[in-house]
Length: 289
Image 1 (cartoon, rainbow, N blue to C red):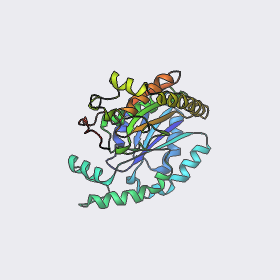
Image 2 (cartoon, rainbow, N blue to C red; image 1 turned 90 degrees about the horizontal axis):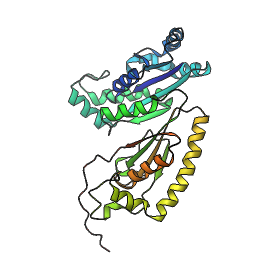
Image 3 (tube, one colour; image 1 turned 180 degrees about the horizontal axis):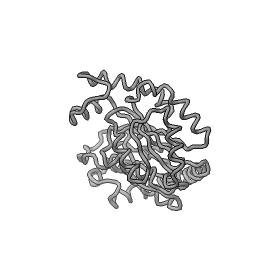
Image 4 (cartoon, rainbow, N blue to C red; image 1 turned 135 degrees about the vertical axis):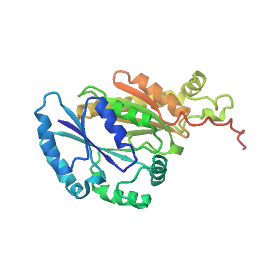
């Protein structure tokens, strides 16, 4: 049995992940006490049509969370594939979301900030068990759903690779397994005609790819990633995220992510540009010496 435990702080997107997994054919249950997980899997094992399940576990479980580490360890020892997906976001983002939706925090009365703090304390042990952490602060509902579909939408046994461009100024993607920094390459932002464009425009692509250092980097990165991806597959990993970062996530990283995906087309590679949709930058002032 393959089980994905969906957990994390309230307001971070657990319901979105659950819905996406259900659309992929996962049998999902919300708020089942951890101590009942072995029985839950035992019941599903008798149903041939159910091979994958999702289980939402959060602070509502209260004292049942205390047994989480032992329960997960016992299930893995019994041969079950258990992944723990922890969803998180900064406190200020969570406060804004609760304000927008006007929903009540499960551990708070009128003080939502205190509820968020208490929830983090309750979930600390379960977060230690996480196999992946996703910060949803910069993700829309559709963006989070795309990540879930990319990770779990492949047939069992096939590794799904996501090549994700991003901007360092907006923070590292917490779900990344490998991070490559391409800020050493010449920046199209400082070319007035290219600054308003993105890495999906041909003129920007040519500016980045025609640089000799870019070609050296691509050759070495392709060799490294092919080695890592093959090893991930051999170890039974079902998904991997390779994050390519530049300053703003709009020019260099977009070009390099797309080009690496093309070079690694013998694998199942999807491309995602996290920060390309941010506001277009104004043309830069000429640099002063």
